[in-house]
Image 1: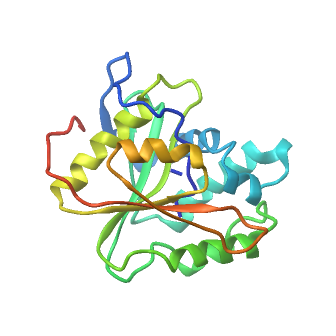
Image 2: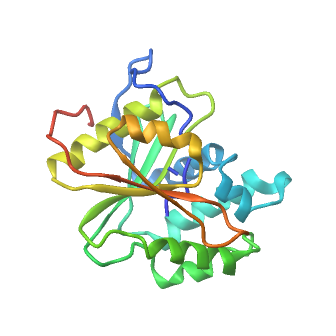
Image 3: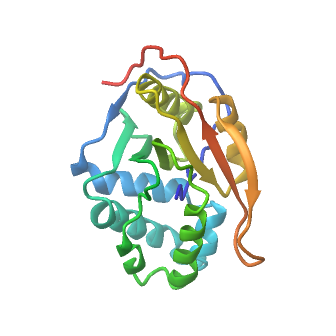
Length: 219
């Protein structure tokens, strides 16, 4: 899943932030920092509001969810990129043809997600639309609310250069229509809207084929 903001992307601009930024791989020791950034970024994302409906506890619940996910569910396969000032992070994973990035232990998510069975079913349903080719998966993308304008775009643009050099397409999905212009400006193709049933959020499939490689600034 890209339980996004990719899953909230606050900046639909193509300009580089005014402050000088670099992009780097984030060490697993910074897991708590990554979880905190993502929780803040996803606070208003439709799928997170649906999964964690208690407004007073949403930030704490989201922080616990991301901490659990990164620590327990994906200990060996997730890769995180971030700006050097840690105002934005991007969690990715390489998914091989016909495989899913989610292990069976997804059903053991914390009890804080009280609608876990429907949420798990929903994520598994989205998995049925995953392309059956080798690809990079944008799982989570988030920027802090006070991040400089353009930070998220700058981060994604530089990570995409890595994947372009590898000749890999990128797949993701979004439950927030405000994200779609952001992805479109990065060369993504916006796919169809999908909805499992009347009680679940609408999601949009997003795909980007590999493009000619250009130098990146990732350190």
